[in-house]
Every structure is written in C-alpha cells, then in structure tokens.
Length: 273
Length: 308
Image 1 (cartoon, chains in turn purple, yellow):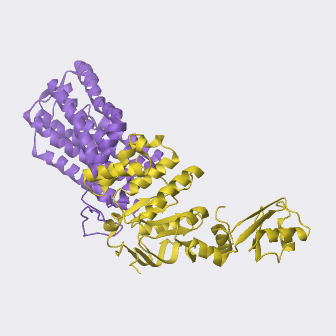
Image 2 (image 1 turned 45 degrees about the horizontal axis):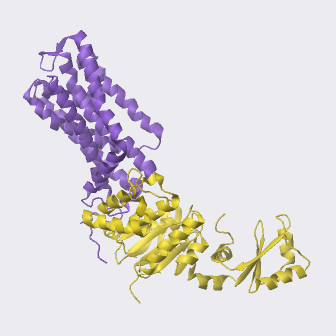
Image 3 (image 1 turned 180 degrees about the vertical axis):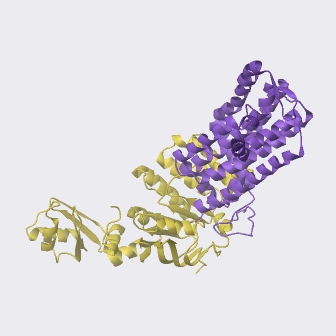
C-alpha cells in the first residue's frame, strides 16, 4: 500500500512540526462549511456597515452638512464617515471569523484536534483560518466600496489603493483576533472582545475627528488599531495622501505578524503536547 | 519475524509530577490486532496519543513504522488512521464531505479522495447517508463515519480509542463486524477499551494497563488461563451478608472474591462449586455459572473491577 504524503517541511519536525505547506485544505474546509451553514450570518455582517452609512451618512449627514476632511478641505459628512465604515467592515468580517468561529472550533467541535491528527501542522491551521477571515473581510470591504462608488463618496483615484489597505487591515484583525481567542477559556472571556470592539468602533475618529478629544484620550485612541485603519483608508478615499500614512501600514503589518506567531504557538501548546 | 510496526520501550509520559504513563514497553507486529485494556485513567489514551505522534514522550524510546515520532511527526501521522474517544466529526459538513475534506488535510489529490470516499461510505454502510448532516446520524453511524474518515489516507495502522463506548449492543456488533473485516484485510489495529468482550472479540494480543503500568500481557485466552479459572460461579446473599458468608465458603473452588453485591467463586467446574455451597447450608438468592472472562483477569490483577 502506498500513500502519497504531503511534503512536510523538515526543519522543525516531531509531534510539534509546524507546517506541512497545506493551508489551502484548511481554507477549503472553511468554504464548504460556510456554504452549508453560516451564509446568513455572513450576509448580515455585510449589510451592517451599509445601514450605518445610509442612516448616519445620508440621514444625519443632511443635518451636519460639510465637515473638514483630512487634507483640510471641506467634504460631505457621508464622505467623512464612509472610509471609516469601510475599515470597520473589514474589521467585522475578519473578527467574526477569527474569534467566535475559532473559539467554537477550539472548545466544542474539536475541529483542530482532528486536523492535527493528520499531516497538518499548527501553522497550516493558523494560516488557513486567518486567510479565510481575511477573505471574508475583503469581500465585505469590496461590496462596501462599490456602494461608496455608487453614492459618489470616493473622492480620489487614490481610493483604488484603499482595497489593498483594507486587506491589510483585515489581516491584522484576523491574525490578532485568532491569537487572542486561542487564549480564551470561557464564553465570559469572549464577551470582553465585544466589550472592546464596540467602543473602539464608536470612538476611533469614526464619526467625528480625533481633535474633539483632550490630548490624553487622543493618545489612547491612537494606540488602538481601528484608528490607524480609519486614518489610512480615509486618507486614500479622500485623496489626502501623505508619507505619515506608512506608519499605519507598519502598525497592521506588525499586528498580523505578532498574531500569527502567537496563534501558531498557542495551537501547538493546546493540541500537540 | 517481521519488523514490528510499533516498538515502545520504557515509555514514560509525565504531566508535572504525575506519571500518566509509567514505564510501558510493548511491540505490535504488522497485521496484528493489539489491545490496551484498562479502567478510565489507566494511561491508555495518553499512550495512544504518543503512538499517534501528537504527544511527545517524557522518557523511553518509541518507533512507529520505523520512525521516531520526535523527528517525523507529520510523516508518521500521514500513515495512521485515528479514531478518537470522543467523535470529532466536522458538524458543519455533510457526511461524505467529512471524508473529502479530511483526505485533503493529508494533501491527497481530489480525485483519489473522492473515489475512496465513495468506497468508504459503502464500507461503513452509510451509502444512503451521503448527504446527511452529521448531527442527524445515530451514535453508531457517527462512529462508523469516524472510522471511514480514519481510513481515507489508506493508513498502515488504525488507532481506535474506546471505539464502542456509549453505543447500544446492536450498534456495537455492527461496528465489531466492520473492524473484524479490516483485520481480515490485514490492517494493523491498535485499540483501547475497558470492555472485556470487545477485547476478546477483536484482539489477538492484549496488555492490561493500570495506573500507567502494564500488569500482564498475552492473548485473551492465555490471560484467562493464567490468571483465572475455567468457570466462575456468581452467588448473591444480599449485600449485608456477602462478607460473612464468603468466609464460610472458603475452600470451595480455587479462590473467591467478594464484591459489594455478590461473591465470585473461581472453579474449574461452576456447577460442582454451587453444589458445595448448598452442601454447607447456604442458599444463594441468585446464582450464575459462567465462563471466565478478562474482567476476572483484571479483578485478579488489580483487586478492582474495570467499570466502577
């Protein structure tokens, strides 16, 4: 009997070998599962930011009128909050897949345990799951960008770059979200994620500029990831591009990297003792 | 003699100070059906995890298919089929999809996996459940699906951790039949169980494990011959009286054993022993003569019954 074996990387082997180069099989599993069970949740996550845009951007925007955009020019209120909601769409998509879904798989359905009994390693799982979350974030973002275009809220050609920027944002949240989730033990812990996400969504210069806060509060908000996402995307869709935006890119690159390293380590500790 | 497919020498697994597996040695020959028998917490599952190359050993040596799991984890796992104690089927996927997706985890080509999935659904007698949701399957069907899934990579060794725990008698027999077929086809089976009848049905050779150590080793019949008598007489005098009566029955049969609810008398002829009991003026509430089983072996070896 001959068995075709997935090429396993020889560098770190043993029960704790990290990577079999087969993350796509993990993604394939995710697609099939989503197709058969989760699609309704996916659809609702897609519409949430669009409803915000319509109610606050168009509805509230009629009362607010024009506001000062990132470059100092006057822009419609809807064009001010749309890029922020775009960043939020990417965040929501990525976070949904990488937190609750992952928590359930670790704690209850034992999916990863089954995967790790095959030739897969923890890095295959981390990479596969994070990529899935990233793709979901990207889908949300793409749909949202189309809506923005239709409503005339993309003010510059730089807006094209908002799409890769949003991918990076999704990757940061997906990776970091999965890492944090892998340390969670109970449902109560998981509620902390919502407890942090909700105010971050409201206060990260999403609906009004950072300058309304006193300096101490500004500092806290600038430390949180969503603010970096909002600033990056807003700069691109309004065309107020500057070199300083590279710091935001760096922030998410580091967040992605730290997330995937911790996720891999944690999965190994959990399932391959 | 052919090279053993599993070779464990002085295997130890410690969690902090607690030794879950404490100096275990055994070999498994290709095509053999090997059982680890013992109560809950004996170290069976820990041993299985080490053999399955998902848990590293604290001490000793271990060779699976000629490879050391400390260095060749993924290579070894790619040639094993694992049926874990608790079903971990993918409930977000349909029955056959479980096999398809699992096969891809091994990096096997799609077409090969699809073909094997069809064969294995038939083997598991789940032909008509191809599109069923996992949740809608009965306990026995889930187990058979898990076994089918474990066979998707055409493994050289199939590891089964308590394959029939929690199943009703009929479902157990269907499962045993399937496993027996695999055995006939030459698949090496390694299974843990705390059911004596299961070990007797399926295993060529058994090690009895208790508190992380091997207490005895041999074929089921050898073990019964060595550690028990041909027959066992079970008599009940009511839980209050068993202790007292047992003392007065000493000398009948080879030896006796007092359990909370009954007295076991080990004798080559159970009916004769029962005659001797009534001769001494004791009439049991109920009596039963049966063949000796591995349960008796375990009781003899550890002084405890297997299922408490």
